[in-house]
Length: 120
Image (cartoon, rainbow, N blue to C red; front, side, top):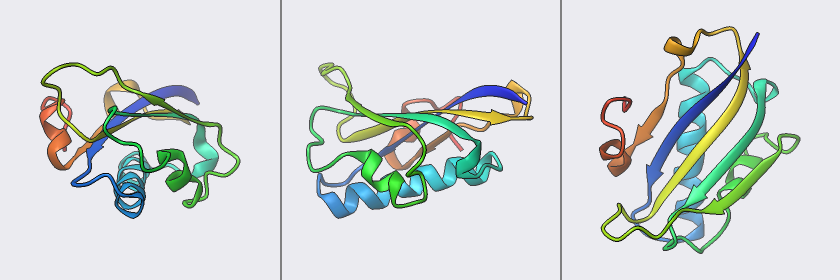
């Protein structure tokens, strides 16, 4: 087993708690499925949000998916002028047998524009 870092991002249409939770769970579930993971494989998760997201913590949405024993942290992205608004990003550290080139990063909704080279 190796430790790998998996990236992903999703955008919100509005900054509302229920929508934030839905989109965050959509992203986390997509990362897990794409990489054949279970919560036991996850070492830690760092979520970041653009400064225009204040309704709740993305980690709260992940806990509802069974990540209660996984260390989760939320932080705020830099406020870069002209940057894509309402973005939740994730950096997930996992144990996996997959070689680095076979790790799948997931970018959903408008976030595909952030990394078109990695987006599904």
